[in-house]
Amino acid sequence: MLVIKISDKIFHRDFLLGFIATFSFFMAANYLIPILPVYLKTIGFSNTHIGIIISAYSLAAIFLRPTAGRLYLGLGTKKLMLMGAFLFFLAYPLYLVSHLLLILILIRIIHGAGTAFYATASTIFVADVSPGARLAQAIGIFSTSTSLSMGIAPALGTFLQQKLPFPILLSIPMIMALVTIIAVMFIRKPAPLKSIENSKPLWEILSNKHVLVPGITWITCSFTLGTITAFLPLYVLMIPGTNSAEFFTAYSLALVSVRLGGGSLADHYGRVKVIIPSMLLVCAGIFGLSMVQSAGTLVLFALIYGLGFGLGWPTMSALVVDHAGLSDRGMAIGIFSSSVDIGFFLGAAVMGVVSSKLGFSQMFALAALVPLAGVIFFYYSYLSGGRSGKVSVKNQKKWASRG
Image (cartoon, rainbow, N blue to C red; front, top):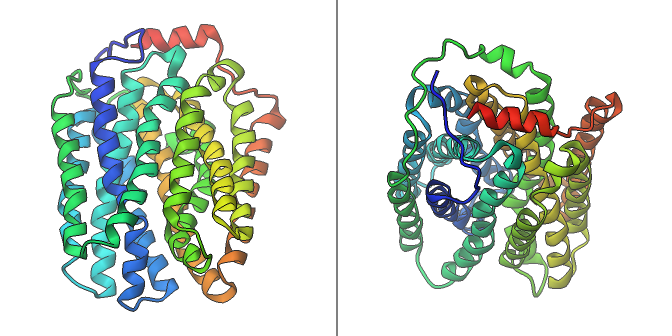
């Protein structure tokens, strides 16, 4: 079995190159958030159809993330990251091909395949190159690459949408994807594992409590993100003095702040004791959107939502990695990461129907019940059984020694 060496330091050459590549990748992804729903509305699609098209992005990722986790054993993270970035590079001009519903769904699936490969590989990558005793902190810091992109890209898209035609708008994320490809090519990663003989079968990893429970729980949080991504740009058009860029910028600032300043909380106090409060913040943030009447309240609830999401994702990811063997790590992360896409898909698709029937305000209020159910499920799965989710120093050293 290949031994992957892990530096005692978080910041080093490969970590920084991966950070730059991931920032560029998610700049390309998040750039379309304010553009695509409005564009689809202008060419005649209903809220239900918009929800279906937006959520189709997640369909490929749902099924391909576990596969990407297994491919990691043969290809390594670098090649998987390159595959994802290349699909992203190709996807953007395809949006100009047709205005037909089925064609746009197909394009979104291709786009989602790029996310499946890149996002899964980049999560494995940061786990590979980070010290075990500081894993949650390292994942949190690395995750700020996506957080920063969430703050910058939607604002950039909103600004340029008012000045440029759609064909030119779609050339900009192609450049971002190209930057990702170049940065990944300069990463010096160890050779990939050549054998999967020691890895467990998919069903066994999927049924593991430390993969299944975090995965189901995070579906409920990602449900809200799918709802926001699909419908917030349309919702704020009805509220004078607001725009979606304000929300995503404030959300991004909260993500970056909490991941840089609070990334070590889960390493010190335990995973579960951080996850529960973070999910309650997600509930409060999404419920607050139902009461937005000004830019100030929009920003306030964006900050609350961002604090919850910013603490929750890296901590939940670290919880999964804590209990995954080296040969099973890729599959475990791939399966868990599918929760993002499943939740995103369900949020956009289900709430598209709800918003058509009840309106946006009621839709956001109802969406808050979903992560609340996730909190209850997670609590009874972990905390009520006496588990703190804290990784002992001895186990941290044992994990680090695997590298």
